[in-house]
Length: 183
Length: 230
Image (cartoon, rainbow over all chains, first blue to last red; front, side):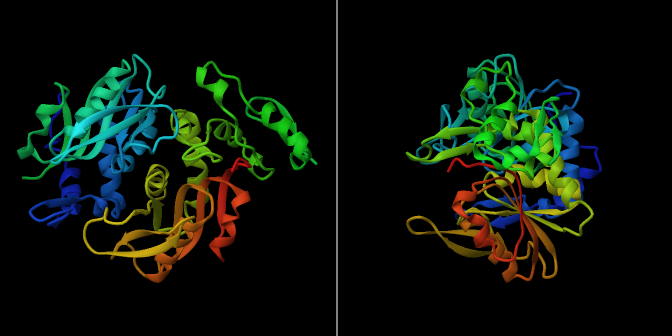
């Protein structure tokens, strides 16, 4: 299966209607995609997880890496259901043990994503999960971290894509699976 | 007096658990040597008598890594990321909470950012409850209510979306660990302000030396593992 929108599945529309768009957050002009309203609907939340689990359960995924903080909401349920370990990818100074980091660009300046040394092993097959892909900068940093320790990134999985920001092209050729597009 | 046979087939006398010197021995008798190189660095969290009644608990306890002097000297940090790498221990952790709360009329699982986000959603999904994130300031878009709480120096706030929960709902609050209880107490106040009843707070780890339980007032606390390392 290539990374594509799950167009035919009837559960998708139910999820899409639960996403709340909040204008001018965090600043004017941005239409913020709020997934907390999906989490308030047990059926929509379950459907979201089920769609990803159905896609990945037979793909021998050994690691689900979730990007802080909203990737923590979706990654662990997927990991538990497919029998993979869950690895949090965090902002600087949050992880207590020895870490490696990858820098990425923001609109103004840089930020860093960190991962624990030893969490992921060479040969691990990994999924990267976040709630949304915008420019793809954070996901690209996540892919880099995983590849540096010898893991194979099988796919990136997001609930929402903002296709106009072309994040899909920044994933080092890795496929993207998303459920809902927002234009 | 009774015997508890761990999932590893080691026989442990439950009366020994109340004696500090023997609990030290207990710690090592339940610690499983494993082929993972990380294991040699692990100091297993101590366990209390009530914890070992469930045979899944020792493995959960031994999967938690203690990192000395983080975030500052003198603090023994309880790192649950190693628990998340152990698929059986992570599944067991969630299962224990789910077994406790399923079918109890809990309609809300509130999880405190960020490590509460790892344990809360799987529990919410399994018991058919909504998940409500409780976040640091300015992270939640839209209208929020906030509650202040004390830190060692200064204060902090947690926030929740207006309308996420409704009066009369029954909630549990999840975090990875209870230390001083400040954050959990603030979470309780926030939910109570909007008319929600908190059935229980649930954490993987308690640091009893910090007496966090006392801050929770009437709200019960359920814990899997206690650690004397504080």
